[in-house]
Structure formats: structure tokens, C-alpha cells
Length: 291
Image (cartoon, rainbow, N blue to C red; front, top):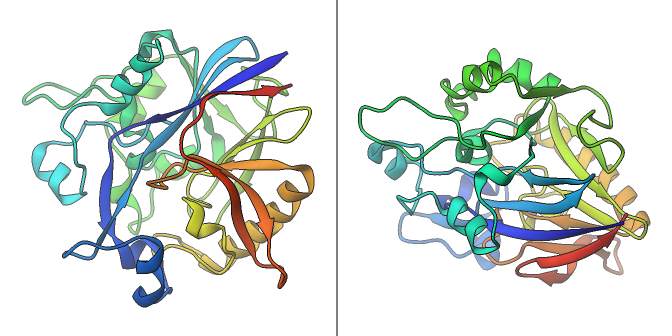
């Protein structure tokens, strides 16, 4: 049985380059992603659509969406006013009403904001994807309901009650969830946010890992690179190293949510054992994986 994968772009952002690259000097990171006059770098908010995964239409994340009011949209560098993800899904013949499952690595607004309808003055927040089950890690759900002051602003207060009241929320604690069975294997990371859930689409030969904020893009494959947004950079680096060792041995590719240029890549090592991306693909248009 085969699964077809599509990369679908959501709203794009420009964020501070120093925050995105942690302790990497600007002289180095600006060669990877050039900065504008305000020191911001361009970032994608890319989702992964899987057709016929466990017999379901599955969307991995929803990007930042268009839920911000204009003042906050400007503050967080969101470039488009419309809900770009809905347009991107429409371009491959899929409406948000068609999605059976939405899998969320975590609930920071740049990964889950696309669950909400576009902002309208005076209108309450409204949940999209009316027929989907929402799969979220149980540990991260606890963080989202009781955030630390350091990351409280990263969550959308209106979103959690909407998910809970939908009756379609599934909290996951182990390597698999009830809705998708063994077709998706979950890995967990603590360095960026508690209970970050990384989804591996399992295939007979290789597979695909939705990297979320453990590895936001090609530049972050290099093990020492982390973000200023990470809560425990040293822990994240060790988690990344361990996971890359495992994934490379099994031929699993990486899917990037924030890389402005590439949707996925294979994992390679140079003569000194340093990890980097190889065979990068800008866009997936029905890439076939055999389960």
C-alpha cells in the first residue's frame, strides 16, 4: 500500500536571525539565510499532506495561518493577510473540510495557528477542519494548558478550549496513536518545548520524519546549531544527534517546516562525521512511499 506526500505552504514569516540561530555568529548564519535591514530572515510555515495514510487524509501541522490581528501580524513578521494554507491545499484539490486527521508536533502559534479561520474584526476565534481528529502529544498538551512565562506568548489562548470542546482531540503518550495505528511512529524531544512530537511516516524503504522545531530547516541539521527559542539547547543537540544517527541508518528523510527553499532532504555525513542535508527537494508533488 502506498502513500503520496505533498508539501503545502502556509503563511510565511520574517523573524530575527539571531533568535533563529542561537549562538551561531551572524557572519556564519547570514551565509545560510541572508538577513534584511531589520536583521530578519525569511521562513516558511510548511505543512505535509499525506493522501491515503492508514486510509485517511492526513495533514501534519497547519503553519501560522492568518488568525493574528493586523498589529500582531506585523509584530511577528507574517507577510500575507489571507490564509495561504487553504489556498495551497486547494491547489492540490483538497479543502480543509476533507482532512480526516491533523497531527500537531506542538501548539506554538507558528505550527497550530492555521487551525483557526482568518482574523475578522469583532469575530470570535473559529476552528477550521470540521471533520478532522486533532492528534497532540499528551505531555505537550499539559505544557500548553499551563505554560511557563518564557513561552506563554507562543500559545493561542482561544485555541485550546476550541480543540477540547470539538470532541475530536486525541492525546498521545506513546509511539503510536489510535487514529493512525502503526503507519506513523512518534519520537519525542524536550529541548525546544516539553513533549515536542515528531512524526515519522513509516515506509518499507526509508520513510519521512516531520522535523518540526528540532530541525527547522537544512541549516539546523548541523548538530551544534540550535535556536534562541529552544529551552534547553544542549539537550536538544543531544536529542538531535541521537535521532539523526537512527534515521540515517534506516534511510529516513527529513521534512522541514521552516526552510524557505527546501521541503525535504536525505541525511548525509562528511569525512569528519558532521551531518548535513543531501538530495534536497524544493517541493513534494505526490512523492510515493510504500508502507
